[in-house]
Length: 413
Image 1 (cartoon, one colour):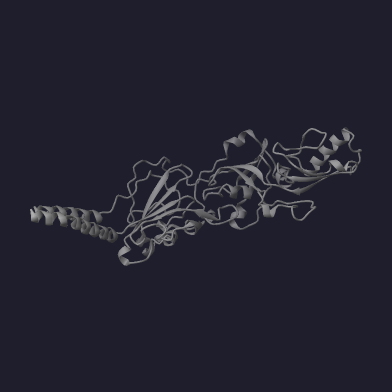
Image 2 (cartoon, one colour):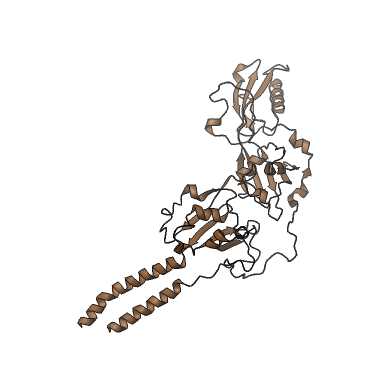
């Protein structure tokens, strides 16, 4: 009986030992799921390549860059650039105004443009001023007050001035990381105008612009066409070239108004100049990390915190692996592997990439296998074979320790 128990324990230990030395299968992906340099590998690189389980949805021989104008522009009027560039930012909900009247000081004071685009003057119906320039709004108010005989028809009978230009809602779509409605030029309580300074007149909210709206939507992706960005207002649109903001030459940003739409087309190919912090790209990215190797039993022990998972835009996989303590330590731990989980934003396809960490550190061609990280990517480190072997030895010791009392009792019987 004791011999049979020892034999069972030995067989289990040998099976576990062999299992520890077997490398798991490389991740499988749909062909064509990769969209950034370093995500796909040539054969013979030494890194796990996985099995491609489905044909690429892109036709063979398709062009690398495939730019097309958004179809929704077909039903809109193309405006001259001057119509938008030389136009002062129109009034929007949340703007604060000062109204002064020569004949009725009681109606004067500070007014806030309501969410429906109107201001409320006592004794009069709501007056729509949103979408108008400041002079146009002043003339609208003057006409109403003259008609109701509140003021005389004098040139300076009504004076309207801007105290503060508030942030405005803008819809951003296309090749950005977070499509949707954003607020461009939103101010913090500390940056509000006229609250502490007292009486002021005039404001220039430089953050109420197309570039700020794009940044608020997560910034442009590396496949964005920053030479053809479309600003839609009402039934008209204008094409803007903001490439200078990304590449370091002159570019003229445009003010936005409430209800504007910004469309950023995709070029269908990667631009490395858009994979770094610029006025059009995100300054940093949030990455999910997991390091549960033997040298770090939990993420807290691996020093993975908010500072580690928030990385500068342009960080590559190997830099992130260093930040999460997956590189270095005992040489017995050098046989680690890392998995990067990312998503192709153009197709919605997820891709899982496995890399041999030591080869990334030592191989001269590491850049071809070292992809850039994108917002919301996830990285995990796997144990080395030696770490797994130590776990097996510990399991064998535990099994033998558990079997000893049974052996002793079996000998007594």
